[in-house]
Length: 262
Ligand code: 48F
Image (cartoon, rainbow, N blue to C red):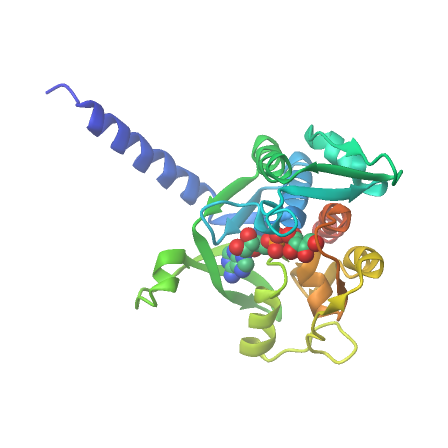
């Protein structure tokens, strides 16, 4: 019997998704959160040859980029991170009375980062929430994942596990994965108190610098980038300027690569 178009479409989706998921149950790097820092890290690591996967809770990756500032869909990036925009092919315009600062369309930034990460070879699983971590020998070696609708509806459904050599917590303000590590594994993180210090209020210039400085490994096998790193180390928030996020993603990729080469 000839296959109907409906059957061809459904079978193609099921078989290609099945293969994609199966291929990514063991990876080099698992990025939690498809925000700007996570997407830059994913692209950089994928193009350097590391098997990299991104798990994003929402339907659309891009995190806090889409909405610009107060839903005005424009954001600002400073000159230090302009080369990352260029690398992704994302347009920006230098602000006439503020040399060294560039304004750009937040929809182009979000979609450009997503497209760049995918084209570099990273796989993105959207609608997937990371709800726990897996441990081996005092090191994080896996992520426990489930469908976001399952977690949102609090359905009593067991998860799946992805094994990885390195995790990047790119979950933004709540630093969800490191919170899980602290709360459930009851281990000390590499911070002055051994705990998450908590994000501080707005101080844009400082926040932009500390976001990058705070990007590092906080427990064997788990790194933090972007606002997650700032929350863990008590850094300041900065609003809709995104250079620090992009540079944080690059630094996360460099540090993860260094640790994988050990
Ligand atoms: O918050 P987010 O954009 O991360 P970021 O890279 O960038 C922060 C900026 O967007 C902005 C800012 C800049 O001035 O302050 O906030 O630090 O993106 C984080 C992504 O992680 C997803 C979430 O849906 C968002 O898209 N996420 C959070 N928790 C989980 C998760 C989880 N448990 N599992 C999967 N995805």
